[in-house]
Picture (tube, rainbow, N blue to C red):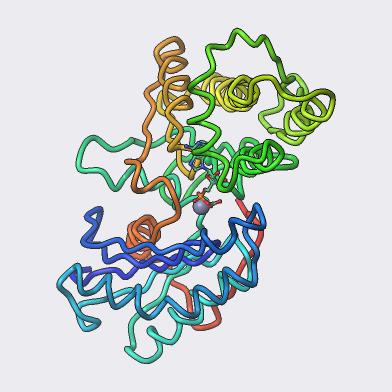
Length: 332
Ligand code: KG4
Ligand code: ZN
């Protein structure tokens, strides 16, 4: 395909569009309704959908402008069709369909969770080789995959309750620290030296399970906070973060042992967490696997990851039609 891909992402609170060419990102424009959700401590679906409707045209125009291209240069529209908030997804899908129909260009639906894993392929440097263990850690999902190729994977485990990013957001709300919780908790935890000796329990889901559970850790924080006035908020943040991240690292190590994979690829908002990067890199050195993280600008939701994965799938013969619909739930 000589023409370019327009990647559109509207699954949650980011409205994003990117122009991509193979693995190259010519532009990646992201705007977010995050500020409108802050006072609710989480994303309000209706507010997110309205924001997408308001900004999608502007964002797409801007992505073309930055890339120095116009719609006639676009040969494929790639759009997130799930998982995510149904109203938010439908805004992007409807817009992409209108472009596809009006300009007579093909459209392809892209899985948002898998696209997070392909964020590590947007780098100029070394990119991961298949097969690899993919760890998706976001506000909506926490899952481990064995990725055999761009279009072949196996779900190894996923969260049974809260996603890890969601747990960060909820713990932040409990501590009155604000939204989104991930970056705030990470920063606050840094000023604790760990001498507070608080321990929050990790959930145990069975000997061979690669599933996750974060609601227990979150509830443990809630009970701790209710029991007595908190002496040190940084100590609570640190203890929560260590327990949550250790659960991610332990299952990732177990997944590598089980599948004999020598490469781990991490994606999603929580992949921006430096402590997770430290812990996984250390586990990789100890257990003999190499870890790939996306560049920070591609950790959160973005159109570039959708464009790049959409383009790759299109090359392999995948197509969607104008009957493309939203798939709100994760389907491996
Ligand atoms: O991938 P993403 O943009 O949206 C979803 O697809 O869900 O991830 C957003 C999530 C939020 O829960 C946010 O708190 C978390 O990623 N997050 C972080 C950090 N930055 C964002 N969690 C931990 N540490 C961070 N530095
Ligand atoms: Zn995401």
